[in-house]
Figure 1 (cartoon, rainbow, N blue to C red):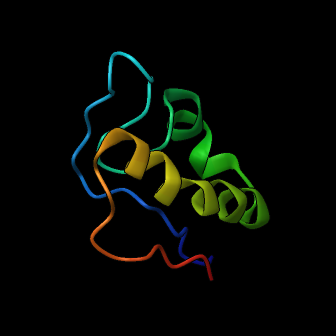
Figure 2 (cartoon, rainbow, N blue to C red; figure 1 turned 90 degrees about the vertical axis):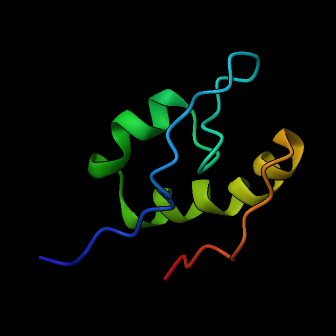
Length: 67
């Protein structure tokens, strides 16, 4: 079984306004569904995260690896 890539930084706090996690940028539905998503779907979501985090003022300290 292959390892599931995740953007989780173990800073789990959903922003009350946007509903996005201030650590990773995913919303609650994405977090809950993550393990069951296909690799292409996870990669698609991960591509959105840097812009989401920037909008929250929580820019990522490193690029997400989507491989």
